[in-house]
Image 1: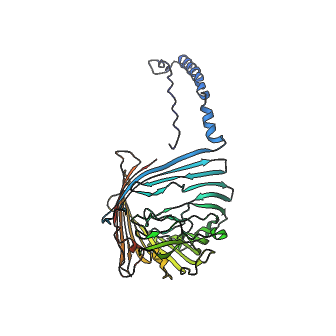
Image 2: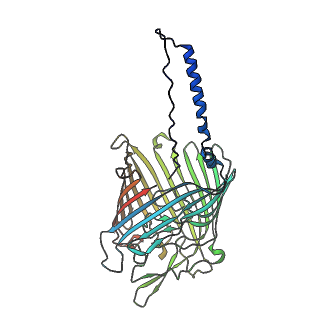
Image 3: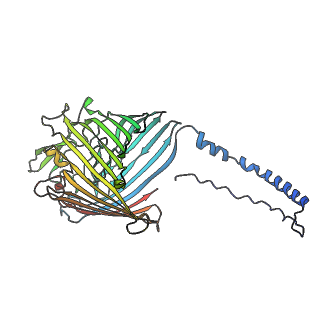
Length: 476
């Protein structure tokens, strides 16, 4: 699928007779010249191979053909089942997931400087008819100039630097329906213009990107009967009655500056981000239902965001094996025309940490990447802050890669809140099933939740959601 295989039949040539030799080993010059003449004539007859019908046209069409054409197609087909250790024993609640997902990626050439990219996604939960995703994640065109490029359409960008939590990654919404710890980024519809500036020895490869997203899109939440639902029955999450921004309040604006920084202390990739527009996660208005349950209504409000981050490798020999990472943003909510009187609190979010690679731990080719991070936020105490997962948490992660033929790996992650004694443990084993197909991957994951008891937080919404997940994935 990644290329075109062209098979040309072999052409048999009559081989000339062996060169006659004198007893002393000297070649007969006359016969040698005759053989050369015959061979040259036969090779002349083969020049027609260059003129095989369509062969030259095919080579030229791959380079010179105009119009829209797909230059690369890839993707994956995945099926995964998630099973919870403790059922809720209520028929109308779903205590398992069986998701099948297909994603495709089309790289499309239009003209020399104009390309396009299309990434459709098809996702369905066989056990929950409400969980269906058919909207494309990305569909955009990019025009590249000499020192700038312009992109328009629906696209996804990863601004994050840290491993577990990315405060600076504010461009895209998340699909929280399948896994709140590793939610899929959703595409945003708009435009980006990026300028490639001149750099120097200290500040290298600087770029400046400007974003305009005029189309507001709502967040995607777990379904009502899902184990990760924010309002499981008898409560209700009223997404149809949400309060959305109107007019110019729907526009999301952002600017992002990136560069490399080379100093005597360290070499680093740095970025600064400023954004204004609808926040990607709403607050919830709570009203009482006649049966005593609660009705939650998403209310979208505006948010100013200012911050940045870096990834640095120290030049000091003592710390050269470490990669330092940091993200910090300050967020200030603002009122839109559709907002109620009360706004959420402003707050500071952060993620600090480092990676270190340990080679040849168990074999002469494996390695372990150890990660330590401190993530959380400060300044907010309103009800909406309970829906943000990290308060003041320590993250420990070890990622073992066998670097073997099957590309086996094992990841172990622990998230601990020392204030509320809340913790989450996660383990993922992955390997390729090369005996069946070289691109078939098997993955087994487990998650264990022990939410806070004294001070309810995000994971307290899911007190019994420890689970195991089995995945088969075929990349093509």
